[in-house]
Amino acid sequence: MAVQRQSGFYLEFLGPTQADAFDRYAELIERDHTSTESKVALLAAPTGGKLAIWLETLSKHSVMYFGNRDKMGCVIAFLNGWIASEMAASGVSATATLLDDFQGWMEKRHAWSQGRPWHAILMLQNLWDDEGAIRGFRTFFDMFLKGEAAEALTPTAKHLFDTNPAVVTMNEAERDAWEKQLNRIFYST
Image (cartoon, rainbow, N blue to C red; front, side):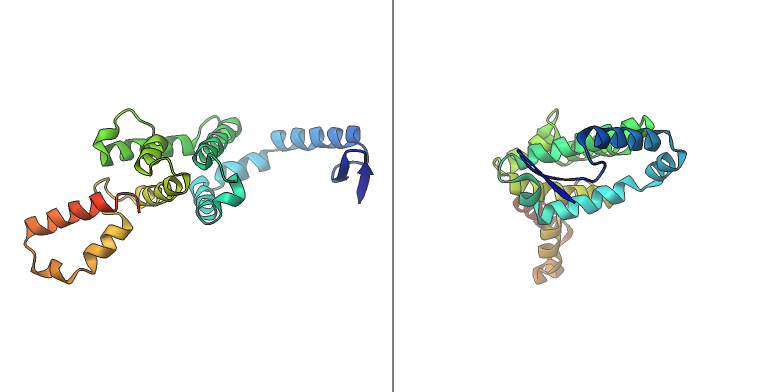
């Protein structure tokens, strides 16, 4: 039921008054934090799977989640919140460990980037274009999650390499040079 107030409308999900709603909210939080079932379900959930689903949605609809400004900053804030929620729930964060490993992978891939965070690398590569940086993040994070080597071809470069009929006639050195050239051209897609 919607109740009109001077400042607009709100829905009575938790109680008929703000005080009742707050009391109900506090009760639900208390019950959730003390319930062993909720903690077990949270800890048993495949964090990587949920994060992958969110990243897939993000790559398709980033404006819907972040508007038009500082999208990469919003991704970082979201991931920091994800890590904080894992730390609050269990004292450890699988996502933090995963992102630390991803940082190392990015540093191996981009030797010039030593000491720069992965998101700064992506922003620089994409000339501070948030959409390009998010696409690059999605590409590289997928490669990382699949266990591909840091030197591996990006999907676009791999497709071009695999579909080039001249590759068959190339010797090993020429193929290696062609792979490196494709990786330099298609470094984030």
